[in-house]
Length: 77
Image 1 (cartoon, rainbow, N blue to C red):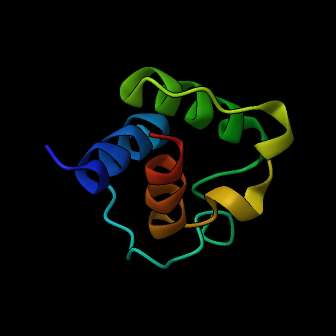
Image 2 (cartoon, one colour; image 1 turned 120 degrees about the vertical axis):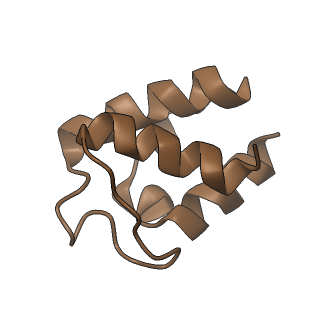
Image 3 (cartoon, rainbow, N blue to C red; image 1 turned 90 degrees about the vertical axis):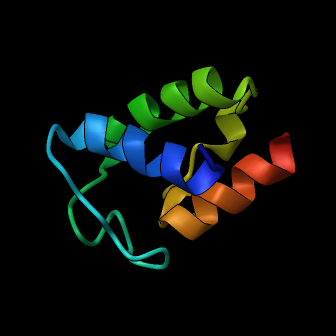
């Protein structure tokens, strides 16, 4: 499974429904993520990809879309 597929799978688990957002769609503007689910997303990303995400990186801008999440995970791997 590639990174993007894993990220979408994590987002589907958080949303508790099937979703298929476009790679550049804002996950915050669409209501899929908010400040509470961001921490759940980060925890899941750390577990799935074996990375550490520092608290200083917990900003919506870094995790606003699947493309941004994928680029961020790639930079931490």
